[in-house]
Image (cartoon, rainbow, N blue to C red; front, side, top):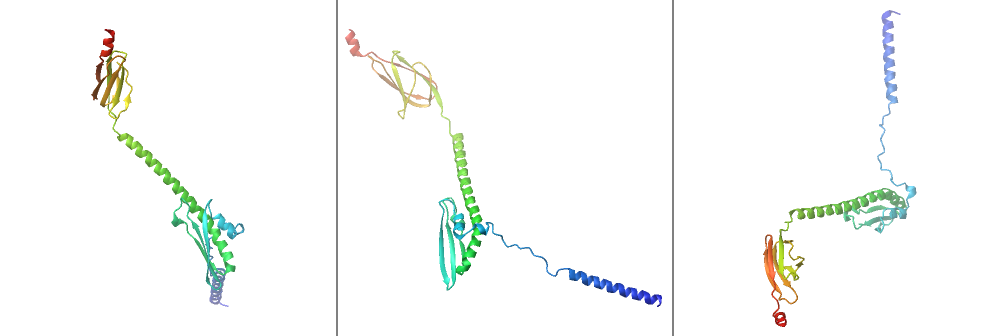
Length: 237
């Protein structure tokens, strides 16, 4: 065999080997790509759920739901579970479950539906309660801020001092504002009062009572003198 023939034979052998290798690799590669099962798995194990148990688990304390079973065809039922929105829950969030099928199928389907519905319902009710709490807290904060703002802008009451002197010294005095409210004022001592109009009355046994009015706009001193009763003077004479 010549050298040229030998080289040609080797080239053909290598080509056959490469072709065989490619075919083997093609056979080893799976034609279908592996897929991931994205079907939601029941959050609550089915072994822990029965129909009544699942319905009970979807209820909060004092919660209510309506169960409606309608026959839509000869051997087909439509089951609707409608929760009643709680006091702190938006009615739109109380979404129902609806499952249809034959009576035999419904036992299985409803349990599967409840397995997903129960945790979702818990999240909804919990979120509604948190929103309600946040709303109440926000309203309380707003109220406190409004009161604080009102106090900040509330005009301060202007005051002045009133000193009342009276003769005789044992006389008693009464100081009242325009609303009739009386203010404790000690004779001869300055007393701080809101600016405004006051009626000052003085009285003493065996003396004629005396009354005066005063518009207090700055520190003032006023004096009341009581006259002896004529009856007393006549008796002494």
